[in-house]
Image (cartoon, rainbow, N blue to C red; front, side, top):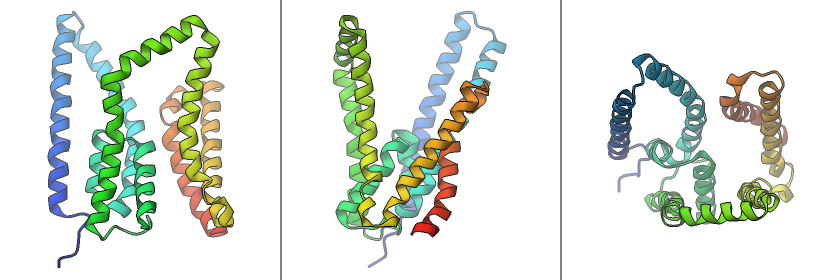
Length: 241
């Protein structure tokens, strides 16, 4: 039986078709928006300036996404992470989803998947999990927004507490993965130290943005903290692993 190939040409073709389709949609709506802006009286120079600024601000989040593709590509090959993080996926979701599915299947993320059933299971977990957001937003977003606005009108303080609690609840899901192995020894603390370094780098970026008024760093804070933490994770792993 032929070995399963994570980077087969078939997977690249399927992923490429979907990515090209989405890019075509983006170009179409860009064209429609540009024409509509001209109808509203905006000059070409203003539109070009807006387009250049938007393109520049797109680079910063793209760096973080590329890091996610590189991280997942060793485990899942290039086509699937490229597809997920180019279309609908988010870096904060895709990696934990893939890691959790692999752990449930007893597969190490340090090695590439060789079983097509394991690969398809992880792909389904990543896909079905993120589809829940689309369904909830489509069917219930208006009611959720109305409920939040009603709560904030009745009591602004409790409205803010409720929103902060939702955010902290989301963060706690990721913290569980970070602290899951701290009882196994020093190597279990590696994710914790990497997280602390990433947080420290983010605080440094925040200091530059808020205190020193280096506004351009605001868009690059996430990739800077990620790259720095990833780079420093190597000596930390050698020291504690």
